[in-house]
Length: 336
Image (cartoon, rainbow, N blue to C red; front, side, top):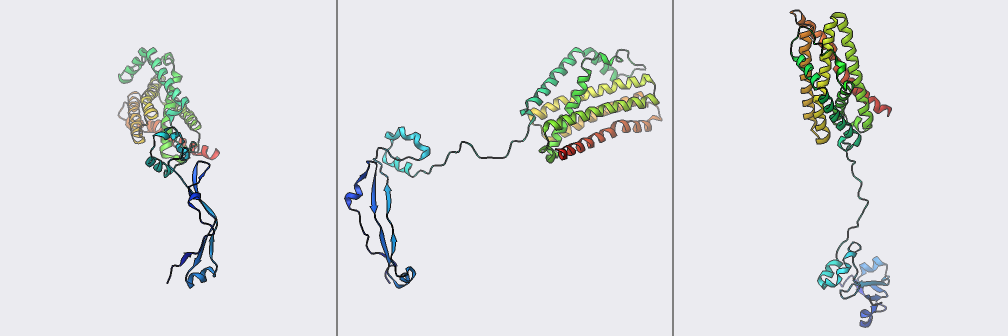
């Protein structure tokens, strides 16, 4: 059996002069009008229906290494100035180079998560809180030192100096700072444990609502303490308890400030943040529990009463606060 396909005859074959003739002094071309292919065996003839196959005119361009304007890839045109340094081998490599298109607009990727340290307003508020706390501690150091000493020292009567709580400069600011720092910790909790809420709610809305709720929590707790103490205890003991309660709120703000700075600026892991927060709050509540026992229930029958008093006015409101924060955050997502 002979070959399946055979070249019968081209209508025009290029001569050597046509092959070597330059086109505009740039490149050499080989021109062929068409080539006729005819099947040689019966099988192929039946496939093509007895008709020859015709390839129409086509042109092939052969690059030359000696051409003054050697074609370059589109992304390599900046190398044209070094054309004189190339040899024939390097030009062949450049000719076979596969260019990758440059896309200055880039490729869309996942958006970067929100971080407090990239927010100018939040970082400015934290730095302002830090410097104002330093100013309050420096300007009222003698007053605060007396309050702390009375907090740990047992006195049968209240100190007249500690009764002047209003003498402390920036009292309202210190309470609001404590609310803001706890809102920052809750924001970190939302980012880690409730991503469905975090990514659908504005960070400013979440932070502002948390700060307001915590401020209302402290206001309600102080009101409940004063209402209960005015019924069951003397005014002297109630005033002494108010001073110690204020010291506990102030201590909470001072202890949470370094933790908040670590969370915001150094990306403290959530597990360490949660452990540190629980430990700090346990220390503050333990000291407050001790003061409650010393002021109100320092008798033999007061052990049961202090559990009811402290749990009803301190532990239960704290649990309600946490559940209320989570509920309000999810409700804001629905409203948004």
